[in-house]
Image (cartoon, rainbow, N blue to C red):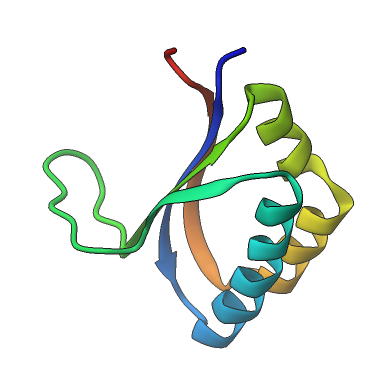
Amino acid sequence: MKKGYWVAKANVIDGDKQGAYGKLAEEVIAKFNGKFLVRGGEQATKEGAEFMRNVVVEFPSFEIALQAYESDDYQQALAVLDGGAERAYAIVEGYE
């Protein structure tokens, strides 16, 4: 079974909303056995649009990554974010 990943790039618009969302998202990630591989940190954008933050979360499978995103808990976290960040977000299957 191949792992699944959340790959996100974000520009934070409202730090309070982003912070509240982040706490809720952490709970969802833990619930679905996800693990942060990248969360912020130094970056060098070489192509495409510049974003303030990059996040990569690893899940045991692509299906679990989808379930986590589509879960009621995560959808509630997104409701809290409510425009607090401009994001590019993908759920991808791992290579191996």
